[in-house]
Each structure stands twice: as structure tokens, then as C-alpha cells.
Image (cartoon, rainbow, N blue to C red):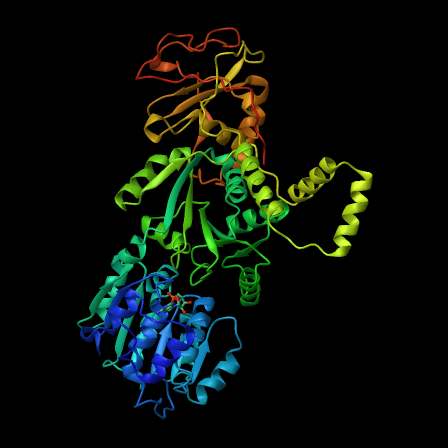
Length: 576
Ligand code: AMP
């Protein structure tokens, strides 16, 4: 299949861009069966979907080779974000340039007066975001009464963002005989409902599977203690040393925090989230394009439409809400035949859920340890050698300075200084509190300070995958203590009990109250309260005594299945 059957002006525009053959979504919308019909298309950013609907609408727009005379828009494209709308506008711009299409872009955050003037001069194609389009419609600046084709781009995202009413109002203002193309990465029920209401006899096209299936993305999952998430991110970035990387967070707050922290550590990073103005977005994207920044920290929504050819690493810093989002985020890498890596950072307690998600979506992922400082040092050395041993040209000035250095220092010292200078530019890796090894309890002697303790309980137990490896950091974070302050831990079916020295208990309880709503690492819903009488209290039997000078399991095998008593190894906890 080639672009040969297209109107020559469009075929020429494509070949001028160097696009020789249609992508699968383009081939699908160009098949004869799709001509003139409503289309319901599952396609993702990067699939060439913008050109796909650009080509699909040619038959509604072109009269012979040219655009017809029109005082009101013939085609309307609605996209969820400013960035995406601008990108669509740019793509249609070059595609329809020779056909002399007039395109008006109407997006929130831009000059509405200028947009109104452009609309009043007569635009063939209008591209915009839902809210701004609705504004123009209500003020009478946008006349949709002659519209021939409406395109909803990333429709799932628009519904998620709460634009359903705006979309309905806009579509209701268009003629019923218009064509409607609905593009969406995912097809949840609300999208199907929208399609039923606004489409007639739509041809369903799905290329999502193929896009996913091209296998250029290697998925990895690393389990970490919740307090180690950021450290793991740092180490992954340092280990992979990707030309560009994208880091996904769930909220704008986490984007802000992670971005600040990466900058502080010396990474070149930009942030994209709902809190940024159009101007800030543009600057961030420009910095990524011209490589002043290598990392982009973003929310799902803010990252829509971004297409960076150099992106080889995606880190899911906070887990995606479902497999579709996982694939959509990951699909930012591994494009155009290049290899990409997508890494999921999985807090221990979420491992089972993530395993199930990956299994259901048939995504083969490798479960690995986050890179350690030693792994990174080894990689650094390889890379340094490669850089320093690469052939290079030196001018006379370089050689003259070299001669002076050799006169002063040994060659070995000079080489070491060179290596040191290169290393000094690299952000330091993190010592992770826990890389998944079990705390070693064997060589611990009795601990002082636990003669008199208070028991607390937390509402997660074996059924919720409770494990000291993630519970301890959580307790430290929420209660502002260190691992040293936690004594025995008893994991029961539905809850876990642990002891805190009495002299630290009031402070601990107080910190718990203050941090209750924080939900910093996604442990919302976890409830920590004093446990009256400890694990053995009430119907369960006698309360265990102080444990500083006793073996770990003073009361013999616990009831209700295997419980784990853990005395953590000497803590290396870093409080953030
Ligand atoms: P999109 O999925 O619309 O975000 O497009 C992803 C990128 O692929 C854009 O930069 C397009 O210009 C580019 N593209 C679109 N069609 C083709 C094609 N047939 N061959 C190569 N690249 C294309």
C-alpha cells in the first residue's frame, strides 16, 4: 500500500516529509470500506493518527485539488490539551498547505480575540480544545452549521478530563449529516456511549494491538520500599543514562516534588502537569527537543501528544491506573524501530496487583532489582572508558597544555584527574534502604530500650501482602521514627502489630496524627492506631513481655498461621 491513490497535493506533501508508506492506522482509514463513513478508531499517539484523520477528511474538504470557498468551518478537530491541539494544527498545516487550507486554532490560554478574528475571516479547518471551542460557540464566533466532518482526538482523555458536556454541546451544534471520526487510545464504556449517540454505522478500526506488538519495548518491574521510590528513580536514570527519558507520576503534586528533587540532584529535567501555563509547556518541550533537558516528569494528561524520537526510557514512577494507561505511557518509547525500556516502580505491597495487571494484558515483564550504586559505578566506568578512548582530534593548544601537565604530574595522575572530572558531573547514585533482601536477623543481639514498649496496629495483614520490607519504611515515614525505634512486628491475617519503646510512643502517635492525610507514597487508607494490650491481648492470650533480652518469638508459634517476627537489621534509613 502506498500513498499513490491520494489527491496529488497530499501525496506530494507526504513525500516532501519523507513519508513513503502509510502507517497501519493510515492504511486502515484509507481502505475503500472506510470512505465517507463514520470511524471509531483505537489508535495511540505515535501511530500516525493525526495524518490518518487528516487524510480521511480529504474527501470532505477538497474540491478537485483545492479547498472550496467557505465562510464557515468544514472540519472541526477537538483535542484534550493545548499541546495536542497545536500539534494537530501543525500537522494539518503542512499536509494541507499546498491545498491552501485556512486553519484556525482555538485553545485555552491563548488570545481569544485573535482567535475570533481568525474565525471571522473564514477558516476551513478549526482545531481546538473543548472549553475554548464551546466559548466561541456560545459567543457566536464559531458557526458549525455547515460542518462536514468532526474529529474527536484522544476522546477517552477528553471524557476523563470532564469534557463530556462541552463535547456534546459542540457536536449538537453541527449538522446531523456530518461525518464523525472518533479516535481514542482506549475504548471504555463512556466512549462507546458517545459513539452510539453521535455516530451512525461507524466502521471500527483497531490498530492498537499492532502498535503494541512491535516488541521494541522491554518491560521491567522493580519492587521497592515506598520510601525508596525516589532513590530507585535516581538509580534507574543513572544506570540507563538514556538520551531522553519520560517519568510518569499520578498527580501534579508528585510531578512538582520529583521534578524539584531531580533538579536538586543535578539532572536536567523539565516538568509537565496541569499547573503549567502554555508558555511554560512550550518552553519545556523546546528544551527537550533541543536537548537542554533530558528528562521530562509528567502526568498522563499533560504528556499527551508528546513525541520525542530520542526517548528510550519510560519510568512509571507512580503506577498507571490500568494496563491501557501503562501501554500508552510506555508507547512513548520504542518508536520507529528503536529499542525502548519501560520500567515500573512497584512498591512491595502492590506487587501482586501489578503482576495481575501485566498478566491480564499479556505484557511480559522482567522483575528485577533496582540498580545499586555498585551497578551504576560499573556502568559509569564502561561509559567513561568509551568516551575517553573514543578517537578525538586535539589542536596545538590542547597538546601544549598536555605537555605542561606531563611536566608537573605523572601520566597516571592526569588520567585520574580526567576521570574524576567526568565523574564529578554525574549525579550521585542512591544507597537504597532495601533492595529486596530480607533483613538479616541472625547476628543481632538483644536490644536495649525495648524493655517497656507500647503496641500499635496497622490495618494491613498477610492478606494485604504485609511485609516488614515495606511496612518499616512506611512506619518511619508516617511516625517520624527510624527503624531502630521499631521492635517486634507481628503480621496477622488482617492486621499487623508492632512495638515502639514507651518513651517514643507519644511522639510517634502524635506524628501519626499529623501525617494521617498525607498519602505521600500512595499508602492512603492505611490506618495506624495504638493496639490495646498488644498482639496477645484479649481472646488471643497473654500479652508478650518486653523483648529486649528474649528470643524473637517469646510465646511459641503464633496462632492463625505463620507470623513473622522481624527485628530489622541496623537501620540505614534515610528520612526524606
Ligand atoms: P501521531 O500519532 O499523529 O502523533 O504521529 C506521530 C508522528 O509520526 C508524527 O510526527 C507524524 O508526523 C509521523 N508520521 C505520520 N505519518 C507517518 C508516516 N506515514 N510515516 C512516517 N511518519 C509518519
